[in-house]
Amino acid sequence: MGSWLDDVVQQQKAGRSQGITSVCSAHPLVIEAAVHQARDTGDHLLVEATSNQVDQYGGYTGMRPADFRDLVHGIAVDNGLQLDRVILGGDHLGPNRWQSQPPDEAMEKACALVAAYAAAGFTKIHLDCSFPCAGDPRPLTDDLVADRAARLIRAAEDAVGPEAAERIRYVIGTEVPTPGGAHEELHALAPTGAEAARTTLEQHRKAFAEHGIEGVWPRVMALVVQPAVEFDHLQVVDYRPEQTVALREVLDEEPAMIFEAHSTDYQTVEALTALVDDHWAVLKVGPGLTFALREALFALAAIEDELVPAAERSGLPEVVERRMLAEPGQWESYYPGSPAEQRLARRYSYSDRLRYYWPDPEIADAQARLFDNLAAVDIPLPLLSAHLPLQYARVRRGELAARPRDLAMDRVRDVLRDYSRACDPNHKESE
Picture 1 (cartoon, one colour):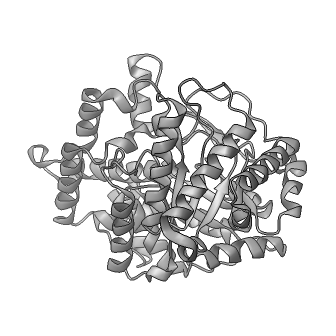
Picture 2 (cartoon, one colour):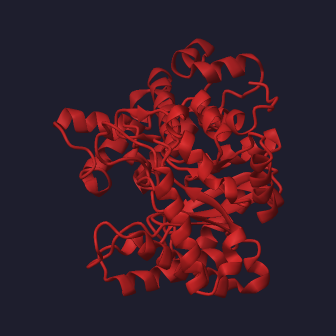
């Protein structure tokens, strides 16, 4: 599996604009949509679990790394995607889940986290030691971050042994965008400076030597730097190639390394293509996929309102709102403003804090009822056109069935299609 990631790097080093989409979501419908996209385009599928979703204790999804592996593999097998085309990654693996604890305790848990991912067969591991722990200097120094990353690599290598470790590809970097988008309102965003990126490489190379893992360096496939791409609740900062001219040259002397771009959600297909052209060959997307899923589910709920008697409706948007108000922990500190502004943010913000609530049993039941209700009726084409126009067009062309589950997944694939085009402009998929 590592060899295909190597191919992406080699294509980039040869001057060809090849990239890969990194699907950072634990939602089964999103994963299934990504499986369909990979199956239909002939691509490999890279799915990454974040450290807050999946850890050795279960994370907020209740899944450990082996559980997540089984989920992805099961969806792939059920939908006709060969497992040798599936790559599993771990995103933001480090001490950030345990920032409130002293560094030694947090790093002990972080090492166990990385070891669990490696042991479960994850072959792409992003190391994120940029979060300070209790008592740490703020901000963290590059040498401390690099030392902790080297400790995590040692834990991963020891967990699987030399032969299996050869398949693992690592991602490093100290300028890591906030997982899930910026918490604060964005005003201006500058790319990582070229010298800062070089310092990151130098400090990590030094730490590798100090920990006796110099031989791992050729398996560090990517460096995370900030290309000045981000989103907050209401706006998107679009990629501007003219800002990264000096930064792009930093990896010219690293034959096995490309850039990885985080927070690429909501970029235009032109911006995504420019990122790949400029050596950000791994494009991570997460909230943008569940944002599209929410759009589809709420659109289907609006269709349901037209077709199903009131007493039998799922009331999905209302159930979501009630449960988010009852359990505000995943959104309250993120969405400031008046009650009306918070209500809009809960439903529609780019940061999509709603994604944390889909596993809620009441919400899951409402979604199932929505699908059952609409599967039992024929959705009139003019009504479908009003609420899901792109899916309507595919239904008209005979490319898509007007089944609620298929419609929802196809809306997620609208996002993935843009990434496919950006990562391989030669794709001939009909749309």
